[in-house]
Image 1 (cartoon, one colour):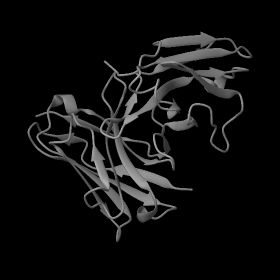
Image 2 (image 1 turned 30 degrees about the vertical axis):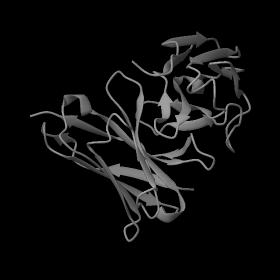
Image 3 (image 1 turned 180 degrees about the vertical axis):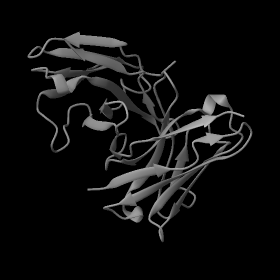
Image 4 (image 1 turned 90 degrees about the vertical axis):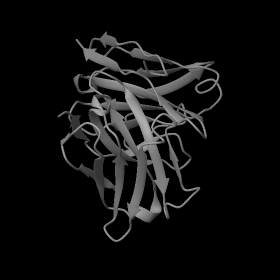
Length: 121
Length: 111
């Protein structure tokens, strides 16, 4: 069974870039579709984007509302999936989850426990 | 404001059944049979309970069932148990650009 673990700085300053990594065990990074999802305090879930191997054009999709600031990447040597979100503001404070997309699409079958990122000076 | 509308809270006694609704539009729930439901205990990883409107992943109790009518999907939990107390989120595919939209979540309290 695939297990996911998010990691990264818990505090990021406004206007800087948020960088998170999702370590994958129990499965190959090249075998799944990978996604990032976040939950702001007191709010619902928001899909950020997805990517699948090899991560080139046509193999990823970003939430239109975040597209200009999001970059996803895959590292097959480390078996990990990464998120970069640039020019962050307080509105980007959230728990960030990585997840796999179930075959057939539209659902997320394996999730990490999430990591809280606070944007504050 | 979330794209899909769920009640903020529902409650029921052990053994009873409850239903959580999830209302979208003709651009998501009403068009695609790709509605999923997630159980989330705070501090833990969300868990997929229902996908493709009615399908249960292996290992999920058959006390959980899903349905859809028009622009509204529903999750029914029968034979409520204390361990079912959690937050529940619905999600729907919404096309190749938006991809998916989520509901705001429903807090289930088992009395």
